[in-house]
Image (cartoon, rainbow, N blue to C red; front, side, top):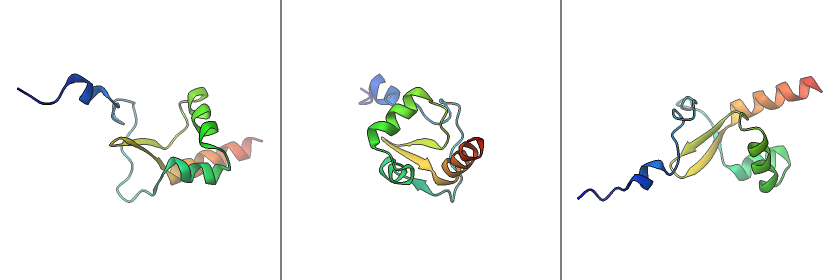
Length: 84
């Protein structure tokens, strides 16, 4: 009998299932805590932002962890700062 259950495979969608590409091979990936330091926000505020705007770029599921593309995040911040 196969030891994998349906829940093992449906726990977290892959980047492809989310419509996202994989990060570039030499991409710098940051943890959520590092992103919070860069943005000067709390972790709770980061997750609220994601809930309100799930299209915030650079978020990748790596195993059970979330990592953020530093390059994509900085491009997003740059675009936001030029609008204001």
